[in-house]
Length: 374
Image 1 (cartoon, rainbow, N blue to C red):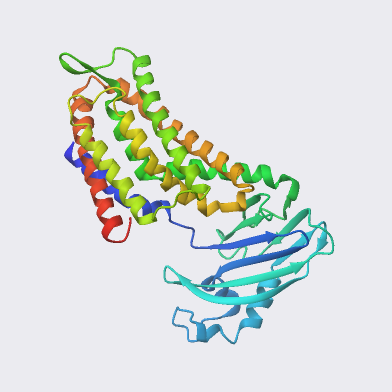
Image 2: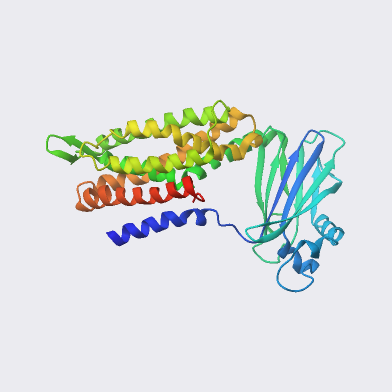
């Protein structure tokens, strides 16, 4: 049991790196569409361009600014030859406004800024992208089309995609769906939110009696207790998520993240009290749920107005969070109910699991409060 708990702790600590792992052969193209104009940012790894343009002049395996500063025309020409954008069915004349050199994670990249103007209001965009397809085989481009606050589209373009098309009238619906997906993904990758919720749900399959903590007699009893806890958490984080999104309340990100880690520690310690059973964790769920809402707001701010009107994005994101949360509960509750009378659950999960959750949360709290947040 100790080895298993230790392994789970290490897995949780390593999860952030796994979640943020990216395909090394990706480009990123963002197009901001106004009524009759378009601006874009195109981020490409220089090492991917090297195979075609031989940018590594000294052949040392690294590409630096001095090696490419005089190759701007070559880079722009090569990029321009592999991107074609049509607006309302007509070719859009693109020009490069700026070429920026940078590095991320030790990997150099070039950021090309594009501009283009149309003669009529842009209602449809077709993107014909072919940069580096086939070299390597897994090369792809992550495309985002933002329609001036009306909504957005997102797509992953590969060699098999062909020309991808988007319309202004479908942007609102697409933006709603993307915000919904973002909410689901955030809760599923929000290891701290998940751990807090699970720690609160662990004693939900017990009830307090004169003889101490005992297993609930039926599944309906456990379900009611879980509904109480989850509802309290949902109401609380919805309140602060809305307040933060509307910019009525703003808290420092480091403070919020550290407090979220601390909430897990408190919830884990609470499970050691003999009176903790059933829906008693609802008070903690509501109180700390207010803090977790500010954490959700950080992810929502990354979507911003791209998903359309703020209320539109807020509703979709919040629904996504709830859908992702319910999926987690749907997996956890039947297992917890089935094991509730076993020594493994009553001792290993309740006490051992809560202990390991608290230790992991202490690690996160230290990192977030005093160092680099994991």
